Image (cartoon, rainbow, N blue to C red):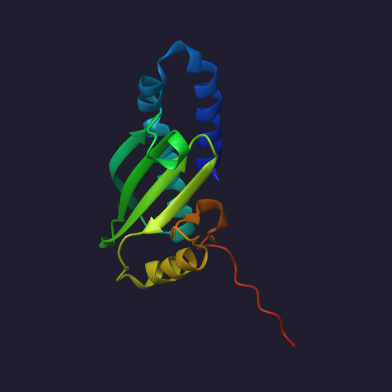
Length: 143
């Protein structure tokens, strides 16, 4: 998935730049790369257009995930503006979590939503890499 490759590249560059004290500006410069990768991956999974409409960077915040460096996004789908997602990209831990904030109305997104809920952890985040691609063929076993 493009998002994990992008996150890994950002992390590697971030770690090499960490001692230059430009962490926040570095994270800001790279935010568009992770946004584009997330949009691409979610489009591959859902076959729906998505928009990232809010972003935040966490850096050295003792109240956020053990002071993890992270990108946090809010997203919505073009065909279902009411279906909102929270996306959390933990740079330090190579994790991308997705959490639904509302329920979808679009039928195609309802199956994605169920997939998301079935893969969710105790914090209601599902790891992006565990979500099924919408275009994957359904395999049936004849008995």
